[in-house]
Image 1 (cartoon, rainbow, N blue to C red):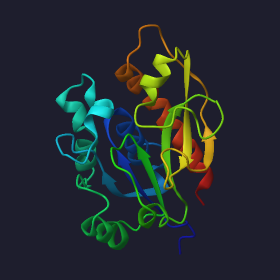
Image 2 (image 1 turned 180 degrees about the vertical axis):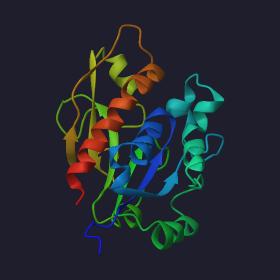
Image 3 (image 1 turned 60 degrees about the horizontal axis):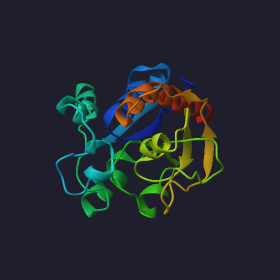
Length: 211
């Protein structure tokens, strides 16, 4: 009989480049032999439940970038959820089918309630750009890259923190190394620049939590 531990069930709430790279790490990276992605939720950019104007979707981007997580999920046999998450429909899907041990959110345009973030036994985490300025960071909110650029920051770090009722205020788990900002970078540039590193950082931290 095999003595291998059961695969850890992970759900991903993500979009754009950060969501794509996080999902890629879980499906194709070193952790793919230790986790099972049981659910994917991603932004429906044209819907009224995603705050498009306040987030990355308000900046120039391609149609392909709107569905990059959706396409990746489908290519691995995962049907992405694009509706509202605080509904009876999603609660049933989440609690009865996904049943995650851990959740990660990476560029996702909806807030979560306690029914969602208290379920996973290993925690419900977010990846949030900021700098090491104390926690909660002054860069909490829906558009941290713009705030960092407005303040002339020459670097970014990624915070992995627990999700709670607040807005990027849950307990800090870890901070990534610094990622330096080139002159003239835009919000979209920073998403592209930091996303692969954010995903590797998350994978490293997740690996420490797995049996």
